[in-house]
Image 1: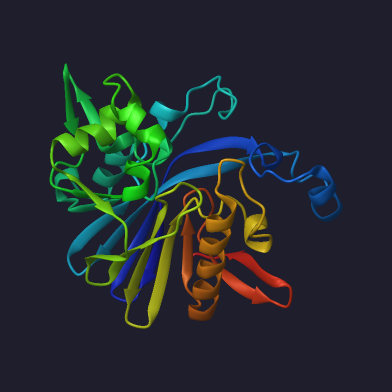
Image 2: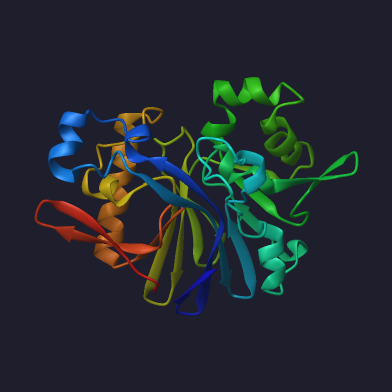
Length: 280
């Protein structure tokens, strides 16, 4: 766990487990572009956390993303080191903080990639229950209406049907298409590109600001080169979303919390921007 004080708000970054991969397998750019600048960095397998963020503000808790490591990663897969033991699950980590799942009132899903929402439901015997039964869950409408998602939801045995579909059945899913205030000081901002309905969360307390940015960036190299991105992204909208966040975060000296990178800040440079790790 990593704690970040933000005025009267507090952010707790929870790592649910590390994934291991090489940037060349994620960032879709030719070797002729990356090798002269980054050497063999793209070829080297590196560890990337999968993180949820707990926001405590005004007596309310808001959770950003709810993964469940064992559901989307298993020992022996290409993204997991042999013999790796992940940290305790999300609910267990919250309980270590003295927080019960029932106390979470709001849960923002940054986008509809399974590692960001696998933990929203839990099997209990033959039943499938909501992990956070009192929470309103926020998902980008464009992700819900995505043809691939509609096809998956229609299949009762799919991971999507067992999670997002279940939320919808229980009336616990709220679709977001515009900037939306969750609670005072916490707002959802649409940032499409990584997925059609990708969204980030802005937290403001006093003069301090933080952004939980989901998969807007997977690596600091993407901050330096915002037009470098994964093959599944929609390039134009993703670049627009990235540039907007870079401008906001650098101008506000905001804390930035990506899902797969340590928290940090974005600093303007003569050639663009760079990412610097920070714990506050």
